[in-house]
Amino acid sequence: MSTGTTASVSTHVLDTSAGRPAAGVAVRLAARSGRAADWRELGGSATDADGRCGDLPALPRGTTHVRLDFAVEPYSEGAAGKQAEARQDAPADRDGGAGPVFFPEVTVTFAVVPGEHYHVPLLLSPFGYSVYRGS
Image (cartoon, rainbow, N blue to C red):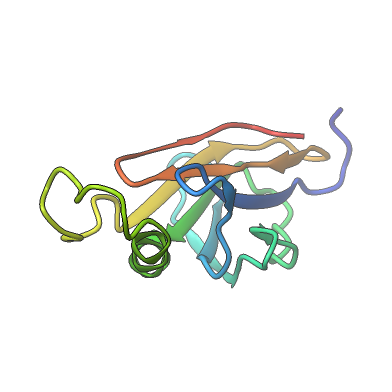
């Protein structure tokens, strides 16, 4: 469905290792108007208690590519501490301690067409992540 209006973007972040939304993840939004164009930073937001960013900036007319930058490290550091407290009787992890976050940030870049809405969830775990086009 392509109309004269710009595309729109929403996202949410789920912590699959904890089985719950990831609250407080900072998300930055950038856009460009062609493969060779420079990225234009549009602003950002942070995920709410439900793991959603409901207030990402609008995309400018002519946007063809979008980039979402997720600041995962601060969330992961806080989540690891909460999970360790909740699992105090569990065996120590295989690396013998918390250690650095494996994915400190996640960047997702995708193409858009005018008139479409793009919902792009991020599923996080300590040593992996996945994204997809949701609805």
